[in-house]
Every structure is written in structure tokens, then in C-alpha cells.
Image (tube, rainbow, N blue to C red; front, side, top):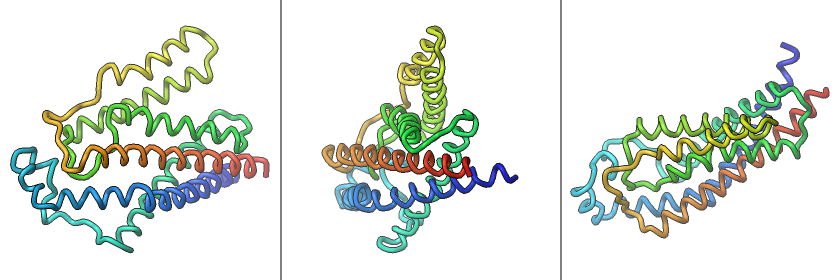
Length: 231
């Protein structure tokens, strides 16, 4: 228990720090774009698209609960970011401990970049972030592909980073490419209520926000892990 306590606090503090940074980045980057997209979703023209599209994916039911704009919405976004940061912090520090070597903030940044590649970049190539009012494939199919892509990308990067045998390196590259060769599930008909330019800006902002989040998480986790493990 004494040995686990420093790891616990390193993961917790790094996750909370990254989650707080993510909340600030979301409030100034992605949230304004989501609010702008919701104006298209609620516009009268959205009803025309809704009548010709998939009702389950293009339009929210009026009775569905959602937080009020302002403080309540910000609070829920912040809570989600803190929980996400904490969960990823435990995964990252757990990976440090399993590897069993010293880690500082510089090495933590590289681990953060790996986390960004695994959880954002690779899945985003097949399933880019979507604004409200965008047609999408069935949720279960997207979740299965996302999880498979994350696992295969993580395994492939691990083989590329820690293996010296050509066969294992080739296998790692193959694992990374495999989900994209299979292809992500796509909707029967592509449609969106928000303009294409707004959707592209949203993809860029989500990707940039995730990159900064992972850099903060990796750097903080590496520094705290090194400090607490020495203590």
C-alpha cells in the first residue's frame, strides 16, 4: 500500500491538472462551435432535413434532457473533463509503473504524444469529431470500431517503440494500419445541418485541444511520477 500511494497521487494530480486545462480549452475552443452548430439544429430549416433523414441521428427528441446553457453546462463539461483526465492519468502512470524505468517530464511528453495518437489521432482518421445534427453510423458499430482501433494502435505503437526485431516492428505497423484498412462504419447517407466549414473548424479545434490536453497530462504525470517515486 505504501508503494502504491505515490503512484495514486501522481496519477490523480496529473489527471486533475490536465482535466482543468481541458476545461479551459473546451470553453474557448470547441464549446462556441457546438453552440453555433446547435443554432442550425434548432432552426426551422432543420425540420426539412429531419423529414428526409434519419430521425434517430439528425434531430434530438424535444423531451431529452440537456444542461442549461451557462454555468450548468460549464460545470458538467468541467466535471467530464476532470473525470476523463483522472482516468487517463491512472492509465498513464500505470504504464510508467509497468515499464519499471525512471520517467521525467520530457519522457512524459512523449508518452502524452503516444496517448494522443492512440485515443484521438488514430480513431479520428476514421471517425472524425462530429457537430450536433450530423448523420452518423449506428452507435454500437462506431464504439466497437473505436475500441478496436485504440487497442490495435496502442499495441502497434508498443511494438514499434520497444521491440528491436524486424518481425515485431512489421507486426506493429500492421496493427496500426489494420483498422483503417477495414474502415470505420459510415452512415447510409451523409448529411449535416451545420455548414461544412464549421464542421472542419470543429475537427481542427477538437484535435488541437486533445493534443494540448495530452501534452499537459504526459508532462505532469512524468514529472510527478519521477518526483513521488524518488520520494
